[in-house]
Image 1: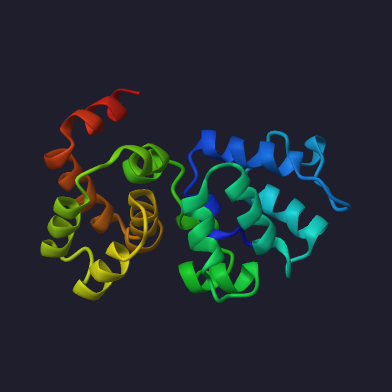
Image 2 (image 1 turned 90 degrees about the horizontal axis):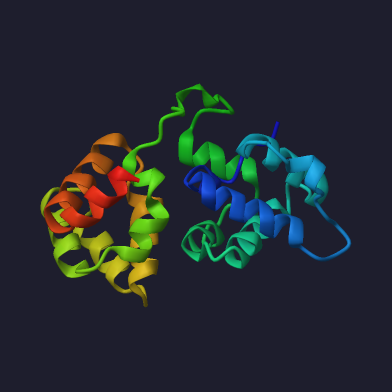
Length: 190
C-alpha cells in the first residue's frame, strides 16, 4: 500500500471532494474513473493514483490536481518537496512506516478549517509576532514565511509545515481566538 501525499491528510472533506472532482476531470491518456474513487478515503484514492500514474509520478499529479482544485497552498507545500516519491515523503513527515493508527478520526480545528483560515485570516504581522513570542515558529522561519508573496501562501506554509503537533495547533488556535474571535466563533458553529 502506498502512503498518501501528506497534503491530502490536511484537506477538509469538502476540499477532498474538490480534489476528487478535479482528479476525475483530468485529461490525458492516463485517467482515474469515478468507480475507482467514489466513496473512497485518502489511502484508497492514493493507491488508485499510484496504480494509474505510478509511484514516481503520483506527487506531480497530486500537485497538479491540487492546483486545479484551487488548493494551491497545499500544492505549493507538496510541490516544494525535494522528495521524489510518496513513501519517502510520508516516512519523512510521520516516521511511522505505513502505520496509520495514530491519525485520529477527529480532526483538530486547524485541520478542519484550514481552507477557511487560509482565505479569511488577516493581520498577519500580529499573528506571526504572537506565534514567534510563543515559540511556535523560530525567527528564521518567521522571516522565511514573511518572504512569501501573498497572505494565503504565508498561511498555507504555516499550516502545512509548522503546525504539525497538537500543542502548536492549540497555541495557534488560542492566538486566533484572541485576534479573530468572530471568525473562530463562526467556524466553531458551522
